[in-house]
Structure formats: structure tokens, C-alpha cells
Amino acid sequence: MEYSLQLLREGNHKAFDELFESYFESLSRYAFSILRDSDEAQDVVQKVFCKLWDQHKELEIRTSIKSFLYRIVHNESLNFVHQRTNRAEINAEIISYNDDATDNVSEQLIASDLQQAIDRALEKLPPQCRKVFEMSRMEQKSYSEIAQNLAISVNTVENHISKALRQLRIELKDYLIVLFILINTIH
Image 1 (cartoon, one colour):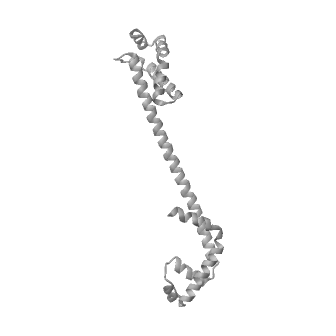
Image 2 (cartoon, rainbow, N blue to C red; image 1 turned 60 degrees about the vertical axis):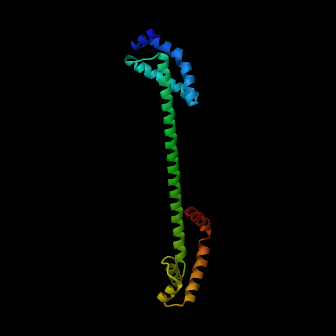
Image 3 (tube, one colour; image 1 turned 30 degrees about the horizontal axis):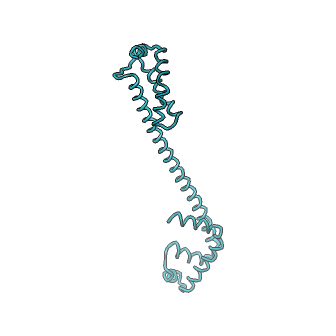
């Protein structure tokens, strides 16, 4: 084999073919023991032989050619496993990001559509009823504060709120499922 190594360094194709024929199968089995995939194992071994040929002039082998080839196949197989793991992690991150982005866009569209429906429903309320409802729900004022600000009784405020809620329930009945889903995803 020492003679073959010298011929390989000189670029002798026959010496390379002999090495390939002698070791390809056993190196492929060894790579398979690491990779657990015969196609990947053969790809790794072919890559090793391609590198061997590309660098034949600079070959510095201090052990037997067999040990040298097994060490290179071992390292290349581990590199392949590492790359496969990294690709899988990156793909998982991309999928997760896309799912999150899609969910976020969907939620925003639903929320926007719902807000438009609420605005339309509020516009249908009588002006005084709408004013009382907005002061209660959007400005977070108490019934007594609303009554005092609008110079009406607390009982009238309660009637306006009841009427507004009844009307909104009717106007937004198609959105009740959407509201339920949004509330459950927020909490």
C-alpha cells in the first residue's frame, strides 16, 4: 500500500481506483453505523474520496491509509450529523416563526373586523344611549359619575346600558364565537 500512496500523491488514477475499490464498501458501512442512512453514508464516503483526490499532492499520512480514511470518514460523518441537526433546528424555528406570524396576522385581521362590527353597532344606538355606553365601557366611569356628568338619574344610566348591551348582542351575534376564541387566546 505504501507504493499505492506514493502513486496517489503523483496523481496516478489507477492507484486512486484501487484505493476506492478496496475501501468504499467498508467505509460506507462504517459511515452508516454513524448516520443510519445508507444514501447519506455513501455520499459522505464519496465526498471523502473526492477530497482525497483533490488534495492528493499534499497528502501527509502518518498512519496507515486505512486508519487515515476511517478517521476522515468518521469526522465527515459527525460533521454531517451536526449539519443535519442544525438544519432541523433552523427549519423548526422558521416553521415556528411562520406559524406565530400567521397566527398574529389572523388575530389582527379578526380583531380589526370585530372592531369595525362593534363600531357599526355603536353607530346604530341612539346618541344618548351610545354616549352613556361609551362613558361606562370605554372611559370606565361609574354609573353615578355618568349620571352626574349628563344630569340624568342612575336609573336612566342603567336603562341605557341595558338597552345598549341588548342591541349589541343582536348586532354582534355572528361574532360571538370569534369573541370567545379571542378571549380564550388572550388568557
